[in-house]
Image (cartoon, rainbow, N blue to C red):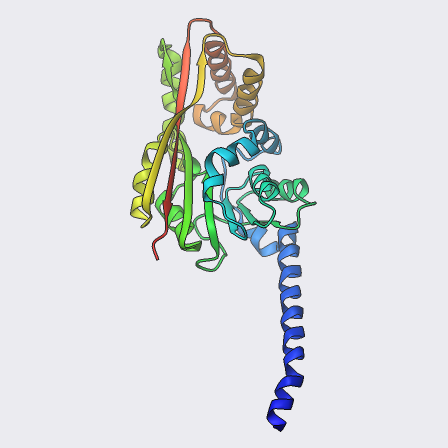
Length: 307
């Protein structure tokens, strides 16, 4: 009887202790999400060829977050899910997921402290989001932490793509979904070809290969997903860039900004800033011609982690 009374008295204490520990963990996670996890920021030292303070705005302008979520993610989302965005950038898509699905909790990870800071700022009014710095090749999360894991337009830049996809699968719970989306043929497919411009493009792409950049990663996503052990794979292939004739002013501005951000890498490749500027000028001039066509495709691959 005494033991029963003692247990009854201790039970509320245990519940209170659990609440205190849970509150501490949430506070600690929130601190890390706001960039106070200095160790994570220091770990984010891998070069990203498009790392620039203007990149967050450029990325945001290229996508309608709610439309993207409805098209690619909605069928995979259920109430109460934990969702991970790998290479989250400024966090606009993860923010849209949590806004459209009020019981979902979202975590974003990005190698760039600037992108993480921007994501935190943009989502500061949503307590169900958190953002941290980290490396997609070796994420700090325990295994089987998330119900849905996705990366969009990231793998094209990574040196160790197989390892990164294996990491996405590692942190996904059994029965959960992993979504990979990336481009194929970016910068490379044009008609009619300008031989000098095409040689410069191919030279640049070959040199960027040293950083891990792969303009044909889209077609490899199915193989990467299968090798990582995902099952019930689905593949979608769609047109992404399509510039037929003279480019529109708003799209032209996007390309101007993209090439300007990439100029330091282009200068390294061509060995001269003047040559890098000349390449950008010729490329934009080509896009602005009424008789040219430029296009690329986007692959989306989804799969389930087996039990």
